[in-house]
View (cartoon, rainbow, N blue to C red):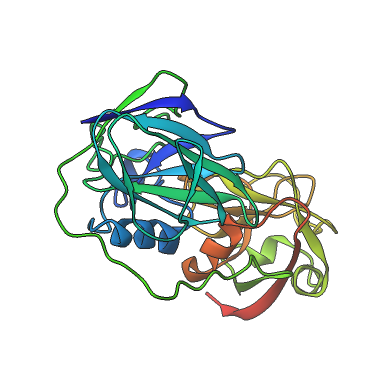
Amino acid sequence: MTVTVISAGLLTTVQDLGRPGHAHLGVPRSGALDQPAHRLANRLVGNPATAATLETTVLGCTLRADRAVTVAVAGAPCAVRVDGRPAAWGAPVRLPAGAVLEVGPATRGVRSYLAFAGGVAADPVLGSRSTDLLSGLGPAPLAPGDALPLGEPVGPAAGVDVLPVPAPPEPLLLPVLFGPREDWFTTRSPAVLTGSDYRVSPTSNRIGLRLEGPPLERARDGELPSEGMVLGAIQVPPDGRPVVFLADHPTTGGYPVIGVVPAAALPAAAQAVPGTPVRFTPAGRR
């Protein structure tokens, strides 16, 4: 069973829960940026959370299924259409054989998640089907004409009576645990980070949430030897503007990390559109 890509939108990739545990090989975790939305889409069609979904970016995508299949869209709200007719968002939808499914542009947020009963059955790499934009592992980003294999359904679709649709928060509040390289910055830099207004830059992507705002001042010259980076690390390049590392972040880097955003706060960051105000709140030290 396959689905054929008619339009891939701005960027549509295959994602699951990622490939953790390979940082020592230089392999990022990758995986769905908004994992709660990914898990919900899977649950709606009866899949386990480990099944691969499609992660769209801003503009959605359009596909055709060669056989009947149940689908669901979660994450950023958007219009869903089957052969041009409106269909439900955030609920199981039966897609007839040969029907065209349109996942429209996000009306709030950035990323929507499209689940198929049985999951996207792309070949796994290091135990994951996730597309990693940094390393190039996993399936390539979708392009028109691509045929995606689907797995066999394993469970019944789950209906819902009420589905909360939280709007992306404004401002986006990100807790920060200071360290491990706080000493590479002036004593006032932590207060600048937590006391200033930043905004999400249009240059943000799956690798990192880039921010516009007051630069952080270094107390030391030069650069660090390359060292390990973790999900949520706030790395500060020479221009002083912080970058919050997301799922496709590099595993090592030489710019100092002033703090780390806990993983639980990152799904909201994944849905923050360019221009969203961002505030950092102190959450202690590592």
